[in-house]
Image 1 (cartoon, rainbow, N blue to C red):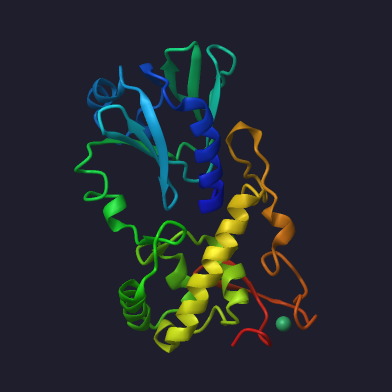
Image 2: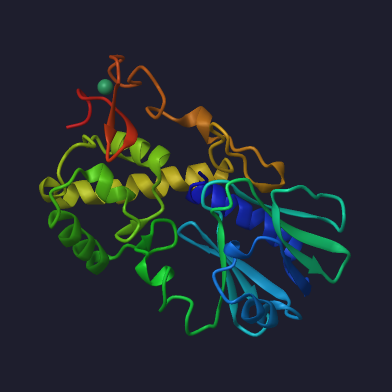
Length: 274
Ligand SMILES: [Zn+2]
């Protein structure tokens, strides 16, 4: 599954190609990808130009010429391709945006879990799904008030800190790979309950998250298992992983633990992480 750095990479690549291009029409082959009524979606999107592409958490936000948006989530396997018309077609192509320059923006999704939705300016952040998403770890300026609010929310819960950090309604941006790396960098055991996290430790978590996510963005994400970003961009962060999928702690050189927490494989060092 693409995580925040991979989605940011997709955003940056698409931005180079799409800005200023007009969507002549949209061909939808698998209706469930579109959350809206199909006619509503098409009539609101067709004829408009893409003026910017943004990201919030793992959502791509295509900004249209009249200040409205297409919100897109790639889920497990969604990929975009920008190619001349009629150069890519297969049974996994579900949505094609035909552009005014002879190119298409093609959405391919082997698992069909990805979703797209039209949003007006007023709806974008005030309605689901973005209204349920917490502070984006890369985009937010974490001032004292926000940190206090986050500490209260984390301290209210007795479940493992790893599970809390994966819950995107508090802080958004850490998936299974990066949360292991962040907790290792913060010297916090992933099993530790949220109510036992101290202020200085939350500061460390935020600081490590910003560093690690930005480093991963710089390296175009992590290419691991089946995931590669759209347009064939291969990430390089897998070479910088310290604990996730590893056997030996880079600090103390002892063996790492691998447990399931909330059903997710979790790598950590029980000596270095308390
Ligand atoms: Zn260690």
